[in-house]
Structure formats: C-alpha cells, structure tokens
Length: 482
Image 1: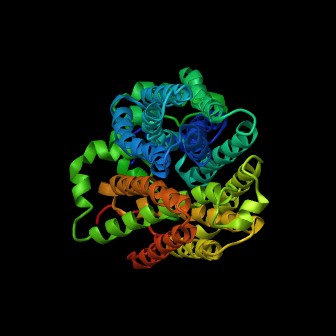
Image 2: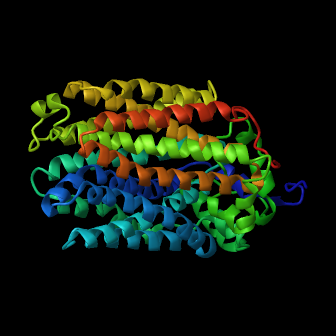
C-alpha cells in the first residue's frame, strides 16, 4: 500500500523525519542509567565477597552464593518485567524495577546476618532482570537507520558503570566498609526513580496497543524538542507495519539489532514461539546459541572474578602475587579498575570487526585472543603481568559478548526472532550463576590452575560452536520465514 498517497505515514517514517536530537539524548541518558546501575550492582560481587566472608566467617560456598543468587534473581526477573512492561507500559516497568532494585539495594546495607543479605541481594538481582526493558524502550525512540551506531553508544553505559564501581570500591572499601559500597551503588537506581516522572512512554508501544493519539502527542513533543517537523498526513497505527519495519533497507543491509522489544514478540507468539525454536530447521541454531551464550557469560564473569581473586594478595598458591600486594592496600581495586577499562577497547574492537570480517569470525578471533591472554595464568605469573593478561582477556570477552548479542536475533526468522534471542540470553544468565560456584570455590581451595583451565575449555567449546553455525549474517536481510 502506498501510505503517502493515502495521506498516511508510519511511526518509522516519523522517527526518521524528526531524527536523533536532544529528546533522544535524554532517552539515551535515562535508559543508559538503567544499564549503568546494573553494571555497578554486578561489579559489587567482585569486591564485597571477601569482606563479608571475613566478617561473618563464611565458607567458600556461602561466598559464592552471594553472586549466584543475584544471577538467579535476574533470570527470574527477566520474564516478569518483560510481561509487565508489555502489558502495562514501559514506564510502569521502570517504576517497579527501580523501586525493587533501589529498595533491596539500600536495605542490604543494613543486613544483620548472611541469610538476610542473600535474600536482599536476590531481590536486587530480580530488579536487575528488567534491564532489557530499558534497552527496548531506548530502541523504540531511535530511527531505524541509526540503531546500530546508537547500540554501540548505549553499550558504553555498562562499561562506564563497571569502571565507576571499581573506582568507588577503590575509594570506599579501604576507608569505610562493604556496607557503604552497597549504599553508594544503589544511588543510580534512586536517580531512576527521581527522573521517572519526566520519562515518556514509548510511542511504538502506544501504537502497538492502538493508542495512536497519545503516540502522536509524544511524537509532536519529540519534533518540538528536536526543532523538526513530523511528516504531513495522519499517523498510521503500528499494528499494521511490523513487516515494513523489519524489511526496511536501512536495517537489512547490515542489521545490528532486532527493531522491536523482546516482549512484543513474546506477547504475540507466547509458548508457540518457544517450541518453534526446536523445529527441525532451527534446533541446530538454537542449541549452538545456547552453548555460545553460556560459554561467553561463564568466561566473562570468570575473568572478573579472577581479577579479584588473583589480585587480592591472599593467595597462597601464587606467592609472587602475595608478596607484591598487601591485603590492606589498594592493589585489588587498582587492578579491578584497570581491567574494567579493558571493556572500552573491547567495544571498539567489536565495532571494527563485526561488519568487516563478519559475525562468526569476529567472535572466533576475539575468543582466540582471550584464550591467548588467559593461557599464561595456568602457571605462576608476576602481579603486573597478571593484571595485563586479565586486561586483554576481559577486552576480548566483552567484544565477543557484544557481537553475540548482535548475531543472535539475526539468525532467527521474524516469527521467533526475539524469543530465540531472549532465551539464549537467559541461558547466558545460567552461565553467570554457575561461574561463581565453580570459580570462587576452585580459587579459594588453591586450584587456580584448574579454574583457568576450565575457562579455557569454555572458550574452546564456544569457538567450535561458532564454526558450526549454518551461516554468517553479515550483509544478509532479516528472514521472515525459517
């Protein structure tokens, strides 16, 4: 249908016309703050474990539980917040997510015992499971032609959150204690609550619900703030233009992200989409993606935990580290800060490779480099070299995670695209849950070599899976059928 001839324009045409301006800049800042908060709460796990263990005389298993419970909460929260935001709106999702995360985060600073801390950190993880709502909301304001570039920018909020948490722990832990780190880390979630009143509802969500008049008012505000104008004519409800959006040339040439939120497809397809992932044409892709995301998350969080364990100065297995770093000095926090900075070149490397050598080979190259950086840690290494090796390993682990997040939705047809990518991401959460139980236990029991070897095996298995994917999606159009 010729919409222009009929005096109609689509939501995507409206977004392209108003462009990316000051209004989207605020949306980016608010949504990015959500990811910034999540990164800080995740990075806490690298710093408070040893302090809590010493204060309450915990076992290694109990220390590991502090990390695992957060990932378990995230796994449970991902589906809950998705359903809430899809049925009742993105803004209501923000409100409840921020309330849970901030409330549980602040209360955990007053935990009288280990059990209370575990329960409250699990609730924090439940709130953090809503991070995909911030991503979906942000994408729904962005012109299709700019989505890939702005996703890279959006990803930097996670990286800066990790860096900021390392700096915060570096400043606070030696002078105060772990409770203050938890309190300060809850501040970004509080800021989300404060700014909630000025965060607009997604016009795409409103169109999909048939509320075109409210969507138009938001689009008019975007145009006013950006000092542009909407196309002439009448806004067409988004219910009828899903296919047009997903087949637009700007996204098909080198697609980077699914254009709609996870929850939109899930609300349409329900469990039928999940079972389609195991059809004869998709089961191979589904299982390979699950292994890839599990291995990627397992190795990424393993590298983060290795940073705290191998740099803590408390290892009797690597005496050279013990002699160079005193448990009371700032060595742990300095090394964590340095390795957190590795994510910035990791993002840059993934951006350089993904559209030049393709998704599969980009991941294979960066996984291979991570393997090379981790391998020397199988044996005793000086403290400075250990930090450098962990820097390189984390840089490449972050790069592979970024490309995998781009690659997974491109592999699936439209009918199951977001369901397939969402389930793969959930499997990655399980990798994050298992990692602390294995890594912390092995390192604390003087089995650093075994821990590093386990991460290397996960990387090798992931590289093999990458080569078994049926095709690369570089330059390919998004598929509407399987």
